[in-house]
Every structure is written in structure tokens, then in C-alpha cells.
Image (cartoon, rainbow, N blue to C red; front, top):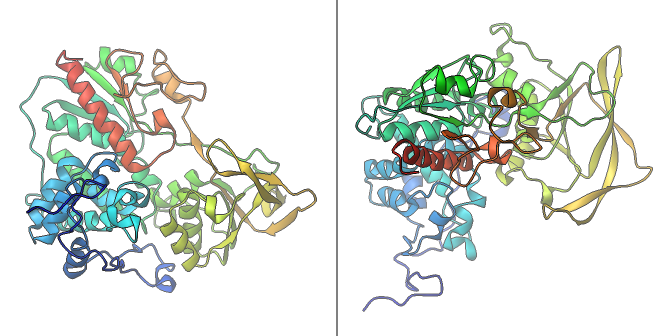
Amino acid sequence: MPAPLDETGNTSAPRRASKAPRTPMPEVDPLERVQGFMEVAIGYDDDLARAEADRCLQCKKPFCVEGCPVGIDIPGFIQGIQTGDYAAGIETLKTYNWLPAVCGRVCPQEEQCEKECILARKGEAVAIGRLERFLADLDLSCSAEERCRPSVGEDTGKCVAVVGSGPAGLACAGELRRMGHAVTVFESLHAAGGVLVYGIPEFRLPKAIVASEIELLEGMGVEFRLDSVIGATYTVEELMTEEGYDAVFIGSGAGLPVFLGVPGENLNGVYSANEFLTRVNLMKANDFPHHDTPVWRGRKVAVVGGGNVAMDAARTAKRLGADEVFLVYRRTADEMPARKEEVHHAEQEGIEFKMLCSPLEILGHDGWVTGLVAQRMELGEPDASGRRAPACVIGSEFTIDCDTVIVSVGTRANPLLAKAAPDVETSGRGYIVADENGATSKPGVFAGGDIVTGAATVIRAMGAGKQSALAIDRYLSGRA
């Protein structure tokens, strides 16, 4: 007689015990890792992966899948680990996700798939992201010929231009190539990968992993054109009329930094987090003069912001030799949008958190930063985001001694986009207006990722790229 169903639609008699604690992720010691840019998380070995996979109940109604922006068959790939059939697990995983080694490292699974895990209701969710990384790393360890490579469909005779090689662009390109369309990816920088290579530090996402995933796409026939700025090299209209592309997908992200608007922001030693991280991650400023691009190495660094980018900037400054790094945030830790894991790692590495503080002015002498004037804040009623809004405490100003200020308070769309596609409708803030399938106001032009939604997660950008690829295929085949 089958076991009865509970209120979740799953059997009330699980197939295995679920009380085992979540398997910890091995990590490099904080004192060692701040001396360089080695990856913090070491990853599961076979025994750890099997132990964690065995916590999965293999629910008949897997809510975790509903929490995944690209709908990965999570029980399916975990079952491959449970049974020791890693090849099957990898194949299942890569059917849905083009960048599993990336997503397993940087996606906020705790707010997505793991949040919906049945075990999370009374304990700790299955470590879905860590298991995804385990399988993806096994795949990466194989030779190019042995890696799991999605099949390419029969040539359709159609060609698509993809603008931007970040998560949205790569996901869209992979899906379109699998359908048999010719795909060319246009990247403005000298290396492909978008935010994956310029925005996320090596200690969170090794660049060799991104390069390997791009090589896999190249092996499937996706062409990458670097140093191609859409808006300067070509407009979107020129791609379609002069270059002969049948459709265009814009996944250029939203990487233009937002500043504080306070006195002193033009002083030497003030960086946007985007510039600071790009200089180190993409241009190897940490290895100057062996690489051409320098970066100012502050001894006392103040980072303004509370998101993952702020954490990345603070932890990078520490690795560049800063004696003290302050994280200045206008709310409390409870409202901080950064992943708890990244906050924990920053605390381990000696980052000092100055909560409920808002910058008023950057001080300087002879053109260089000498300090940051901040004001104490207190939390009031929740704002539109659901977080309690900060309010100033009158007369509470104080000065943080520092020689570097890194601003990480958000990004917006680059205005170059308006030049690239003047007939594509944009919002008042410069983002492209697109429907749920990525279709824009211009026929044949689609868009997805941060350039539509504003800053979001890697996996959500990939989901948008995948959805747009399906819509582009329908458009090209006349089914739209």
C-alpha cells in the first residue's frame, strides 16, 4: 500500500531519514586566503557529496524546482549523485543550465531553490548549490572531448546576434545554438564573460571556470567577437540590415555605476566598486607591474554599500594589503542584501562593519582622500522594498580615517544603449522595455537580464536569456 500524502503533496513516509545535519563546505583558512586570491570554498569530495545528496527526500512534488529561475530538475541531478551515476547527473544538470559551475558558486540558492526545500521548513535545506558545483566541477575536470556537450540541432539557415557575453547572453547563445541557429556574441571588452569576469573576484569564481564554459560554447559553433562596442562598432539596426542578422538579443547588463553625490567624490582614491573590481579581476591590477593596469592600494579603505559587490570590493581591498577595511552601511545586518555566506566570510577575514552609518562628505588633502564623514542613522518604518527606511540622527556626524573610498551603491543602464538602439523603447531610467518573453518594441529585437530588470542574480539573467531564446526561435520560424 503506498504511503499517504501529506499537505505538501509528498509522502508522509520519506524514503530516507532527513535529520542528518547539512554537510559543511570545506574552506581555506581565513588567515591563509587573505594573502592571495585563491578560491575560498574547496568543494565537496565524493564522500561529502554523497552524504549531502542522501539528505534529499526525492519529493514527488519538488518545490525546489519551482524556486529555480531556469527550472533545473534538481531531484534528477541529485539522484545521479545518490546512485553514483555522475554522468547521468551532469547530463540532467546541463540540460537546463549552461553555467552550472558558475551558478553552483555564486547563485543565492538560499533565496531560491533551497528556500523551497521541504527540509528547510523545520531544519536545514539540502545544499543544492554545493551539489551542483560538485557535478559541474567533475565535468570541468574532463578533457574537452569528454565533457558533457549539448547536441546541436540541424542548421536552420538563420543567424542571431547576441549583444553582451554575460550570463543572459551566454544562456541565450547556448540555447539558440542548440536549436540549430548560427550565433555571434558581441562583447565590448577584450575578454568574454561579462560580469562573470570583470565583476566577481577570483576567490569566489575562478576565471578559468568561465573560460572553460565559453570554450564549450565555441566548440558548439558559437562565435565570439571581442572589442565590439554596440553603439560604436555597430548599431542594432546595422546588425540587422548591413550585417544580415535575422534577430538580435541584447543582454548588455547594467554596469554604469551610481555615485553618492556628496562633496569630495572627485578626489584621488575614490573608486566605484565596478572600476575597482574590473581593474583587479579583468586587468590583473593585483599583479602590477607584471600587468599593465595599476590600482591604488589603500591602507585604510572604506567601502560604502551592503550588497554582494560591496563585500567583493571590501574583501579584494583586504587582499591587496589594506590594514583596515570598513564596510559602511546605512541599515543593519538584518537588512543587508548581501548573501549571508559572503558576510560571514568577510567577518572571518577581518572586515569591520559600521552599520547604521550614511556618508555625508569625503575629506581630502592635496587632492587625495584623508577621511569619510558619516552620520549615524536609525531605522524607521518599512519602505517600498519592505526594509525599514533609515533616518538621520541629528548631530551624530563622525569621521572615519581612510585613504580610499569605494562606492558600491548600485548601477544603472549605460546611456550608450540609446545610441545603439534608438528605436527600442526604454524606461525613464534607461532600461529596455520588454515583455515576459524578452520581445522589445522593435520586431526581431529581444532583450533580457539586468538591462531589462536592473541588477539581479546570475541565474535570473540566465533564465531571461533562455526565455528569450525560445521566443527568438518562434520568431525565426514564423510561429511568434
